[in-house]
Length: 475
Ligand code: SAM
Ligand code: SF4
Image 1 (cartoon, rainbow, N blue to C red):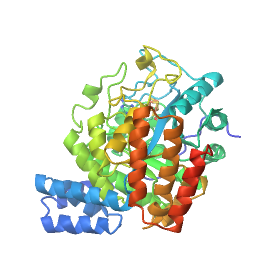
Image 2 (cartoon, helix red, strand yellow; image 1 turned 120 degrees about the vertical axis):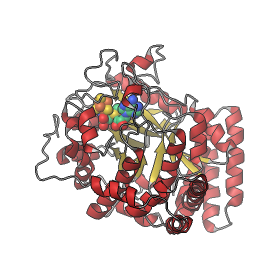
Image 3 (cartoon, helix red, strand yellow; image 1 turned 180 degrees about the vertical axis):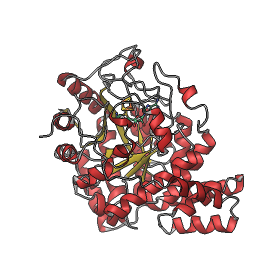
Image 4 (cartoon, rainbow, N blue to C red; image 1 turned 120 degrees about the horizontal axis):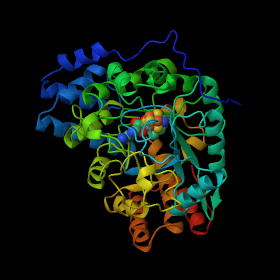
């Protein structure tokens, strides 16, 4: 049992983000030749994680022709490794009390305009039931940083969520986005059976970090930077990293995400499971325009950086949230994004209670307000197959194993069949008529494209079982 906030002890820790080296790579690789850019794209298509010099070269390949080659490379990589699956999840905000003063966040402690709220147990259950009624199976639970939300609290709330079963609904995987803990705290949270633990560094540029996080435990750059190392030491090998775009130069942040990946690979033999790259959004009581005055990331740079990340870390999942608009999300699915949220509500308690003032309990404003059903229909119309799969995590295929398994053939053997099975469940249990029709067509296309084999026969059998009412089948 681990109670209370961790001791922020950074003695002996150093930054593994070599700021000068990043600047130098970005300088040295200016005006790359087309041949060099093509060589790098080819190395990525051979499923190699790129080196910082190579990523810097892609960042500097900014002519329209080379940028298009990068997009095409990213699309090809996505097709080859991930196929057309898109994994769906929803965020669940548990509490917005916070002792930090992150300048950009509506939850910061000195923001008097936000309505503070922590879900009571029955409210948490009501939220989960509402999410299950939508058809969700994978959640990410989000917490402010507050003595109330210590490791034990996170553990207990995750356990509570797994217990909630409504109709055919259940949550099969809970990921966490919360403050970094100490090793003991991470062990406590791990015991609840979490999926990914996600911590965004926000900005990897230390001076900027210290300026925008003026007070509270989060003001300690090194404590946060080494947060996921502590999670690894506690046995959590499924980790999410991220940078909040708009605080500092996106080129620097993108390079730093690669350095963070390399650090984890070198230290623990496992890179991050996912990378997120949220752009700053308007938040209640917060002047975001002023904060992003210098470093706002344009749509075209945003698309480029995602395509470059896709190429640089071929095996890492890329997450794009409802912060972005529908149009942009749709476009970016083809060149690398592998997970999106759908039908999200980011007010505390706002799935179960329709509050006209929900924005005041929210962290920021969403750019994509479609329902999960609509998101799914549009995914199908665009040729994607929505997936609610939780197979790898439940079969222990995480961390090191995940890397081993993420080899040619893996997606065909496990991911696509599991996507089909979980999607068929969704269509039977939750979809509207129109979405069911679009979804079943998409499943037919998927099955037609699959060569005949014993595995395909087995998949057909399990699909029949699902039609008969059996649930939670996976390979
Ligand atoms: N309190 C924990 C922390 O800060 O790590 C976890 C929850 S925090 C609400 C989750 C993430 O929201 C932050 O890491 C940050 O990247 C993102 N965020 C904060 N303010 C935002 C804004 N105005 N627009 C977009 N994302 C924001
Ligand atoms: Fe608190 Fe996290 Fe928001 Fe910072 S980003 S104010 S720590 S909830």
